Amino acid sequence: QVQLEESGGGLVQAGGSLRLSCAASGRTFSRDVMGWFRQAPGKEREFVAFITWSAGSTLYADSVKGRFTITRDDAKNTMYLQMNNLKPEDTAVYYCASASGRYFATTERAYDYWGQGTQVTVSS
Image (cartoon, rainbow, N blue to C red; front, side, top):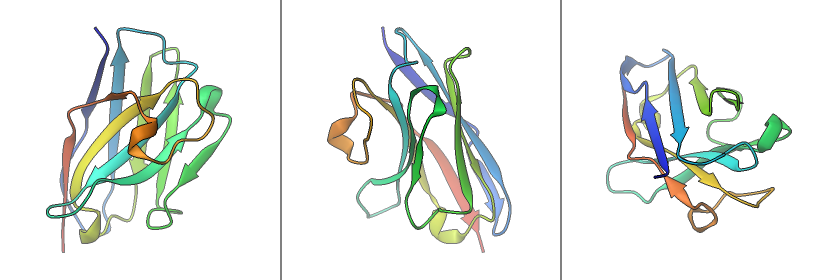
């Protein structure tokens, strides 16, 4: 059974940091593009960042560029999102996802597997 499980969310003050993890199991993800999305209350889910297999390439949404860093450890089947200088507008449920057979994936429909999400709340 394929599973993606996020962890590391929580409540933090503006300007603070959090590190999200996404543990994958059930198949080999080393050749997948892995991504992070988020969904704020009353809004649609939006792309945050992705990383290609072997960490060859990364891409970030403009809203998080320079503050968030996506990495992966294929030996551990785990992906990370380091979030620094957090802002109240970063408050959302964060989801990790994987897309097989792709080199570029910024839309939800490109992703095959999804985690359940982890809540990130940034207070002002």
